[in-house]
Every structure is written in structure tokens, then in C-alpha cells.
Length: 187
Image (cartoon, rainbow, N blue to C red; front, side, top):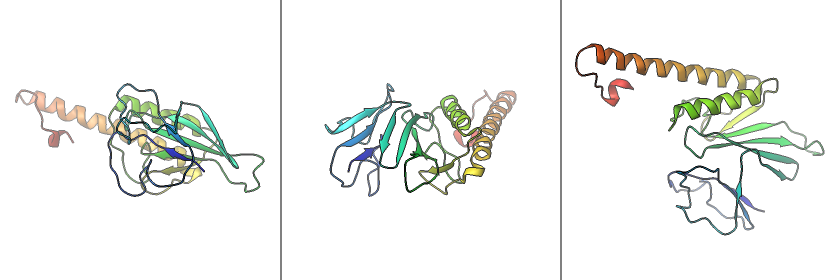
């Protein structure tokens, strides 16, 4: 069988990282079309990798995966919507493999606040009327009946973080100290 090689902005190495490990056969390479993309392969794309696009469906035995580009955490973040096929004898329920877009029990670091918020809103829209479990790259899974509320709480936390940063910067400007702040003061 094949494997899915997920892009990485920074090479982290180690066992279990995307793109590592065995399993012969052709690999699927998730490669969203972004300008500043750097991946786990450090720019040398293996010949057996295929480029996938946002919305593309990958059919596998008993299920399909739909690629959902979710930039923000990094410019190449993706989620995968897993849908069991109606003909599957194994049954099962839909799920979203969120990678680092949604973390179970912690707040994600992000490269682009506006893109990250848009990605969370996109996931929220996917969950409307059809909640599915979220399986993050780190932390605990989020149960289907809690997934919509979990994404809403993440969006609320983003707004609160932004308000706190703006308040700190405004207070620094009003204090007459030139308006400058250190990163520690802001965060």
C-alpha cells in the first residue's frame, strides 16, 4: 500500500513523522499551492509523490478522504475529512483528521491570524448540522457532539487574545514610553 506524505514547513525528523517510515508503493503528497511552501523533503519531491488539491477526494478501501486546505497554523496546513463509504461492511462514522489546525486541549501557534481564523470558520461550517469527531495531531480527540462547540471556543479564544494584545499595545502607547513593548509584555 501507499502512504500519504504530509508537507512540513520545518524538518523535525524522528520516528512517526509524516513522510518517514516504510510501506512501499506510491506515496500521495499533499502539496497545497502556496508560494512560501517548504516541506519535510526540503524541496526535493520524491518521484513517487502526487500533488493533491483543496477539495480533492481520495478513495481508499471502505472510505474516502477529502482534502481541506486550512492555512494559518502554517501556510501549508491541511485537514482530511474521512467519510466511510456507504458500501463499507465495517460501518464507522465520519471524522476530521485536523493535524495541527485543531489541537486537543491546547491552543495552536499560528503564522497568520486571519488565515487561521478563516480556517477555523471553514471547519465550523463543515460541522454545522453534521458534527463529526476531530482527531488532532497532538492531544485528545474531540467527540462529535462536542466538536462544533470546541471550534466556537477556539474562535472565542482567538478574539480574546487579539483584544488583550491590542489593549497592551494601547496602554504602552498611552504611557508615553514611545509605545514599544517587548514580546514578553505582549504575550
